[in-house]
Amino acid sequence: MRRLTASLDTIFTAHPRAVGESYFAHARTAAGFGLTMIGGGIACTIHGLVPALFTTTGSDTVRHLHARMTRRAREAQEAGLFCYEI
Image (cartoon, rainbow, N blue to C red):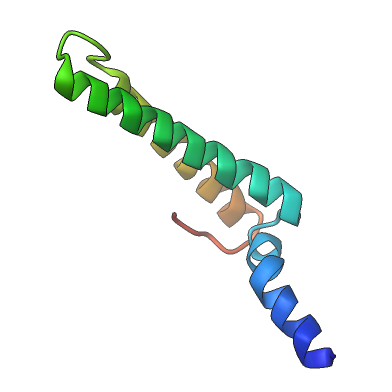
């Protein structure tokens, strides 16, 4: 039982704790990044088919996510937490 509990902790909570988040806060943040990337990818795909549409959405999405990621990494580093990249 102890091994199972340790494994579940490693799988589900060790990383969120290392970056100063609860499991659910980390899930919300990661899902937000993922959904934003999916939206940007769809916009890029449509732009490839119809170049007049979504002319800046892909690069805007990358800039937005980069700003969020670097801000979060800086905040984590200042708090003495594990600094990470996705």
